[in-house]
Image (cartoon, rainbow, N blue to C red; front, side, top):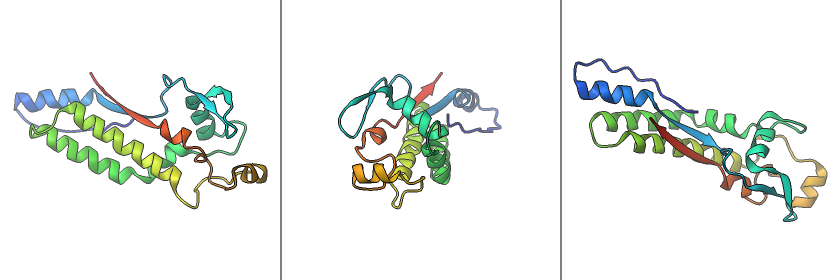
Length: 159
């Protein structure tokens, strides 16, 4: 979850309302659990794991080398994400943007940063095993078919 704390000191009721709404606005980023799509391996075979579950396995390193695609993607792009958040808050407070739109933009910036991090060459992650490199004809963890990256999405939540 990505959130931004704001501090607005004013007697203007509209800005107080915006501040209250901003406290309840956030974006979730990653492969959401409701994406029930089964992982398809390099041979085109469906596996008994969803992409969301696979994302958790990669992030935590469960039974394999850890490839923290989510946390590193956010950390590597935090300055851009902060800038998008600041610009969004500014636009919301001056009335040129809805809170939902600003929250969507924040989530989209984070999701794009994560995908960009995964796509870096050379890969920032632990190398594939030799058998995997031979099978894939390359060593770019998490990107061979593009199925994993394609499922990284953001979702805006405004209460």
